[in-house]
Image: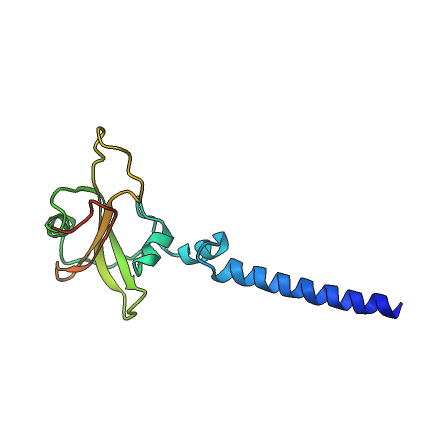
Length: 155
């Protein structure tokens, strides 16, 4: 009976270690669906961007009820100067948090761009070209500019 107790203790310790490592993976590893879900709580859905993609760019966008000084059209014109050959997919008024630098959230217009895919060219192997430009809703100046993909280079 004494030998059985020693084996049970060893088995319980091994199981405890496995459960602890699994729980840590689920909560902290960026590939984990639980971690991605937790990072996405409170984040706005942006067309063509996942919560993980935005997090990798140090961007967190949340809903806001602030009153912008600049209009959506002015913000779009300012952002379009960065990517004149791109199409505007979506424009949203958001509360922008820079997750890498920190600081207070800013009221901003998020302008989402994409590029047309040439039907005669081979299919892209990497991420589809896209960009997000954040324009300050109070001053009308670009706060952040995040291109992704091969075509998404600022002019």
